[in-house]
Image (cartoon, rainbow, N blue to C red; front, side):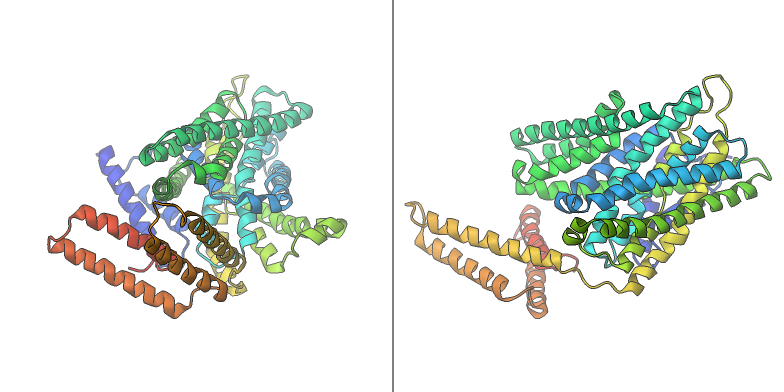
Length: 524
């Protein structure tokens, strides 16, 4: 049967990404599940050659920008405030899941070496940040829950990959040392963080020297790949390198580039992360279809049953671990009770239930070597790949489909802390602007009429921030309608030939920024 040319497949792939995303916004089904299903259906189309998923391609092309972006947009203050909870999940739960899954695998597959069982546990232990963010970010969830889930996702891949590499090395060479593995864990993590900070520092130096917004955006896109390659070159944690680099760059990014560069950088990164995430889940569905079709006849049902058992074990362990990790430190430490907010049952359950697996698990399973040092086939390699697919499928379907209804049923109160902080910050910034205006009003080059006009504007802004916790809905709607009318007039002037498209684009951007500021950025 004739296969479709690569260019046709690429166009079809992009079209499916757009179509599935548009459909997902109108259905109660999370986008990752629809994207995986679409990829699975693509694999059924005659004439479509499913590309072989190279694990190195996944690790290098997809993971660096996704991890870097997640770190870049993470609040270091909130991350530090919840570092104990994050560490118990990203390191403690990964170790516990690896151990329990390894024991379960040995029971289900007699004869499986311990090193291979540990490798399987490390493969399925880290939840996927992309799948969780795609669901949780669209729903009213307490900020602290989001911070803990995002923080866990930044670190758990690193701890799981370090465990995975140690287990695979032991399986291949039949040599394993607990002492060496523990030392290697901390060395890989520490040096990986240093590499990321160094890359972030170099990027900031170049950005401060550059005066071109496009060059700065391209540099920010290249930074995660540089951090990843540098860490891989010296065999340390590339994941933590990207995490550290993204966080470090964000701390000084606001003072390193121009406002236009910041706006452009954010827009470009939003698009890149969106495309990569959608492509990841489409490829995941396609690979699942291809791998299941390649299994010998009659072996699939038993492997799927074992995969479901391991999925349940991983889910139940997290459901048990999270409440213990949340309450035990409070029972043992007065300092924790005094400084940390009391966890809620709904928040604990939500964190415990949010544990979908994704592309990292599949890539690590596919990256297993085909043979050991003695030349024999790698033990249980096919079984591990199938079990990994089952775990991904079960967690995506069971937890992914139920997560949104659970969040809606919990009825979390709207987040107020963020809005309160934003109002205080706007007020302080506006007051500082008023102080600078008073200082500059005595300069010879300043026109008194300009000073008075700006003072009047600042007084209105300060009055609004002081006497209103938020802008009244009626006032926001009036502003939105005014901005919409101005935009329509600009389009009319362009259509009549009174202004050029360049003028329209420039003024339209000003109106768009004002629409975002007043909270009407999603209105057409």
